[in-house]
Length: 520
Picture 1 (cartoon, rainbow, N blue to C red):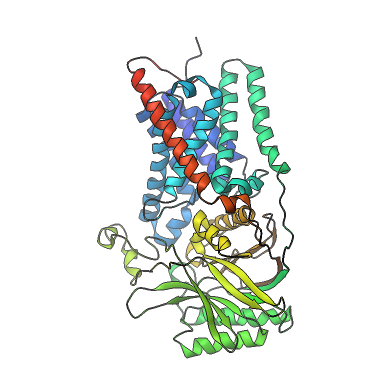
Picture 2 (cartoon, one colour):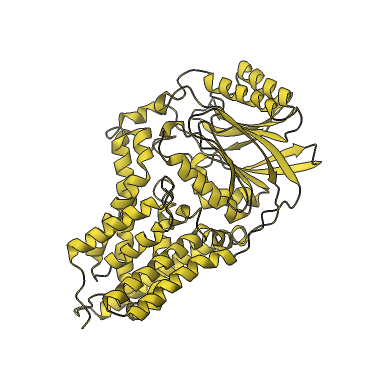
């Protein structure tokens, strides 16, 4: 007979430690190999054949992971929304625990370690995909792929996108978990084989080629991080000060470049706290800076239509002409930029009333055409705003629409000195490799950075400082397999995961009343 399984208390401890270790794989600490260990511990903790028990195990793992990943939510909106969001996310891991239990009851999966190596990642990635779209448009912040910006596995994201990268993290975790099982059964040769296989999967990333050279010239950009006069809810408390900071930072670029040398100047989300399309003074300040640099400027602003609501918008400002192109944020953040169920939400946090006008979504891809006299053609800027970098489809649509570089405009002032900005930078690095595009993350307060198409950061700023960056970005027009395949990998994973769970449930019905015990 196989050795007795671990006690229930020990199982819950494994889950809690696994979640905490996985958090340490993400920015802040950046110990990316711990994501493999965290998933291995989850795999081991879910070995009992009880969907209700494994849902509890998954919940404990989620509570060990999500609250510490998103502490920035506490900084931005307070403890009640932070804990509520963490509980919702942990609930998805609980659902995963139950779904994996049902999937594993299928005859093939129950008896075969090879099938477990396939089905466990499928069900996990399908769970990530569900959380990325629901509820309220989803919250994809904690996907395993976003912990791997420094990992040898990163190049695989150019083949199958974020779903493939998350799946590979799971594969390595399952292999390590299986090694732990075989050690417990005194099968040292089997443990060594599983451990070696895990190492080979990770090292295989070095064999994936990444082309980061220019295909159609280079774009010379300046990026301005102007800083804000305060932090948190007081960050924009002084009218026009944020605009003044960014105008000053733009003029400071003249210490590094000559007028006319830049193809475009990039400002962050909310780089101006006053809409230059309705305020003459704001328009004059921006146009004066653009004239001084003799370069167009991509400026983040907010528009207030007469019909109500507001738009989070990026406008391309040509010196002497004004706005010639725009992009409007497609995915406003729920409970931050707009308030669903306002009457109910008010009972949990009075901060909802600080959002007096809900933000409205745009309906066009993040593509901004830039006329470049130096290059003698129109250059496509792929633009996303703030949290949009976490959503696969929004970034992909910007590239498919013609984006030759990616610009991530963001305002991190509400999140203080938390790891939020670094986590966002990791996502920008993953997107750069996923789509083979040079990327600039530009923030009001940092962290801003220039990223090569291979994910390497060539220049970055620090938090809550005024700074500028100048870079030549390779322009690329080819599409990676991830860009071409689009959402198909995710749909295929979802279909296979659902099939596995249904097949396992049928298998469980046939075995009802027997003692299924632990998995193989």
